Image (cartoon, rainbow, N blue to C red):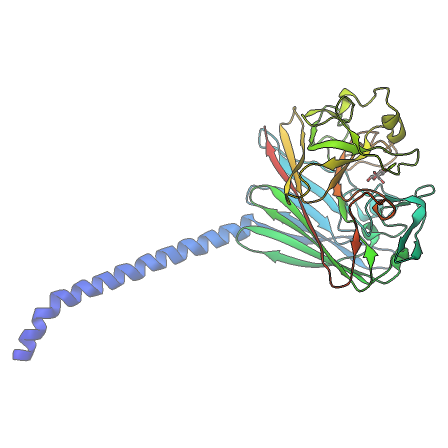
Length: 397
Ligand code: BGC
């Protein structure tokens, strides 16, 4: 009796504890559900999907990976050449349009293509005479650009099949591409293990991370060769796009587009993009360097080379309002204004790609560095890791 009396005394307390526990469980369940919903939302809005893009003459299937973020920005990448085939970003009215030049099908990329959207390697841009020396040994590369070597040779990284891995987390989606370039492939020494990871996040930034290691001393200079037209209309020239390049100097070139070795100040020349200006403003000026490049096709010497990631360049299309910022840790950026496009290649939306309907901003080491003693070194030794990152961030103004 006494016992039960004592127990009765505790009944209200027990009830309170029970109610509290139940409330707590309910709240936990609710937040669990919320989290589940959020994850569900994330995975529906923020994802990677795959489809077949075509077949190589060997019969090998090429896959297209579509990375989509929460804002609906879309990047299509194929495992052939690591090529970005489409990149859809919103304009100031929220209208998504494709802003990179490319082809509708794999066939376009299999016939000679001006490296539309591709990963470039082992060496971005030119190496004079296709020769360089490491430790007294001369290496000879293919001459695929007149008397020079360009963008890795006859079968560079733009023309190989990469092994693809999809990665996604709560903040971003990535496609990791790996390729082993065998010792002496295209004339370059060393087995070069390369990984390029594309990451799309919810701030509309597309990051490209490059990593490589070699078992012999070699030279490496990787880049991404997308041709942008922020208007989303490939029948329009890019001459009214405004470009800023964070550089006080550029590298003048000889008649075959090899840097002369001079670092020339941009001040007072058509090469001054320290404040944003229209590409077309001075592109046709009387200028020997513009004549040699048939427009802009030069490497700019970026500022703050010791600062790691920093803003290298911006591009703005006043009509659509699309704005692109390029961040990198690289010393240089090749600004190329599509001078060799000649209206023969079929455009994705119909018609053809005419001269200056796309521009490239290729972050990289300077062209011909292996042969230029005053340029930063591009040598990679066994035990070292080549590591660099570039981001293309899209917004509107
Ligand atoms: C080079 C150009 C070349 C283009 C396409 C650019 O990176 O600077 O000279 O024509 O790539 O091959």
